Length: 516
Image 1: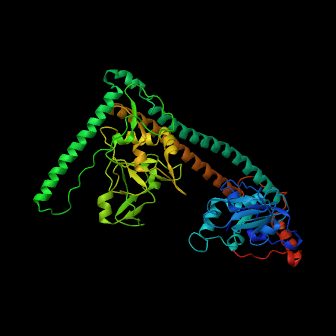
Image 2: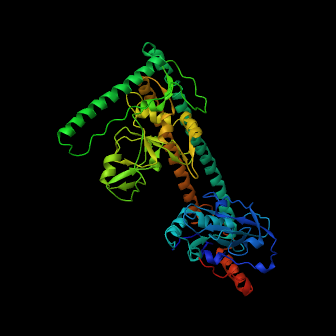
Image 3: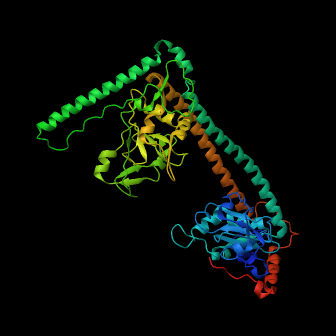
């Protein structure tokens, strides 16, 4: 039982609101222009609503939800309800508007403030209750009208409603200012990250380091020659190992699989080809060259369909998050052949080759946190650490320089944008010495770790702001937000008046319960 102040009354929403009220459509002309509100027109959490879309009454008279100014719209279907798609209907082009059938409509009685009803049904506490009382199949679950009708709340006198709402608005305005500042800071952090990465791969972050090690810097020709020597040396070692394994296989009467001959390293033109962006100038000791020079040959992951359970997680494109592996929402496999062929090793760099234009090129490094495979829409770069380290390559592929180039070379499908392994090898990569790469990674690690810590603080502050809103609403509906005035008309009198007005209304105009 609620412990409410004097002058308040316990009531149900059905006693102070009409739920899904009907209208007399016979009085409306077919060509009457009316506002139309689809579900996307109601913004989650904010209460903002766009009523600018219009249709004729003829287009909406069947199969749409009617409402008018001052009504409260409540999204009843998952996940819109959980996301907080609720709003008060503002002024429209006509008396009545129409919208999605996935809205419940609450029409406050005389003496009941619409904003009070909005806060009553949009707060997290009620949405949690509604979520756990949904009916229907998974993905199509809805809040029935009865959940709204039977919801109990404390009702303040009309005058106190005004004082409560004024206090809520004032306090929410202050919170909104703080939230806006936090969101601006978060946006600025994102820009800072991109600026930092751009600066790193233009050579600016390590200018002081180069000044201290000027005697060890290589000319571009020397750097490329050393890279080519490393590739040739690795290929020769792989070839020697293959020849030894082949001899052993033959000596064992060709028992088991024949050892696979290593592929000869890919060759690339001396100059970068098909560039559609202007690459920044690089400092002494650096050079632009094909990314493929630091790879022993990229490879695609498993194209087999994974399951919700299994012995081995499969990393997919959604698991690549800001250079790291996100271990939530995993798929799994238990296929031994897949596990043997597509298992990741610590330090592998994974490149997302498909999906929306914004996600193509998203890259993360696998640090061996747990055994895993990688899916077919990802490319394992197979970088040669002695030429380009995994962290250095990951940071570059997430930089705005790589992103801009990637957007110009993607292959567009009908619904997807793609970059295949060949195009990835043709990426321009700024090469510098392994020692300078290490210094770049050290600086980026430190500064981005600090940025991440600050973003975590911002996230925690935003969470506290949301919790503060809920605390304010909880106090508001408990009569603890503003002082009471003994001179206010008691809420019980208001309830009696609303009931009398309903009882005296013509039967045809009375609200009938609509289906959920």
